Amino acid sequence: MELLFKEVLRQENEFFIYENIDKPGKTVSVTKALERMKNIIKIDLSKDNETVIKKAIALRNQILHFEIELDVQELSIIYAILFEFLHDFHLNFLNEELHNYIRPDYWEEEALLIEKYKKEFVIYNGAEISNKFAIEIIESQMFPVYTIKGTEYKRVKFGEEVSNDPDWFDSLTHCSDCAVKKFYFHAIGCDSEYCPKCGGQAISCTCEYEELQDAS
Image (cartoon, rainbow, N blue to C red; front, side, top):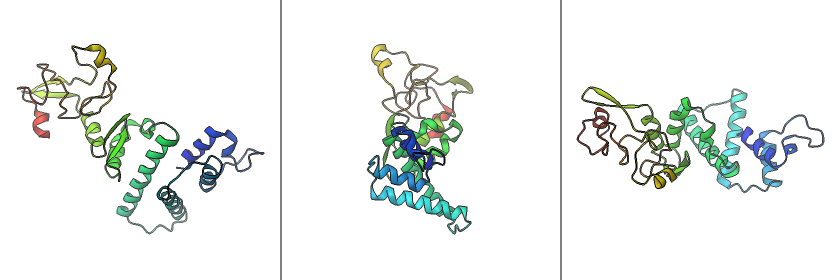
C-alpha cells in the first residue's frame, strides 16, 4: 500500500515522495503519503477507503510491535478487504490492473481473494467478470489437454479457433462467454470452446471428455 501511494505521488511530481521536497533524501511515511494525496493531488477517497487505510496502518504498527491479537480467520478477512481496496486503487489511480504485476504462481491466491470481494463484479485481466469466476479461469489454465477415451488432445485456446469471419474474430480481445484473454484456455465448460478432436462445441459434442464429466 505504501509503495502504491508513493507511486501516485511520484507520477504527479517526483519530489512529492520525499519528506523535505527541497532536500530529497528520506521518503514520506504511508500516513504522510496519504495526506499529500488528499491535500496536494486532491485524490477523492471515500470514508470507507480511508477507514481501510487507517486500519491497515494500525495493523502494521501492531505487527511491528508484536501487539497483534487477531486470529488467523480475522486476519484473512482483513487481508481480503485490503486487497480489494488495493485492486481498485491501482486501477483507478494508476490506470492499470494490479493483476498485471502479480506473478503467475500467485494467480490462484489472487483469484481466491477476489471471491471474497464485497463487489459482485470486478475488472480482471481486462474484462468485467463475477468475483466468483476468476478462480475458474485460473484453474482452467492447469488443464492443457482433454482426455477422450484414454487419448489426450491439446485444448484449443481462445484465439486459436478457425472462424468464418476472421476479421471480426481477430478484433475480439476476450471470449464473449467466459471472458478469458486471447491465447488463454477457456474456462472449463465454456460455450465457446472448440472440441480439439471433432471441432464442434466442446460441451455439446458427442466426444466423451473425462474433464467435462468431472466438472458437471
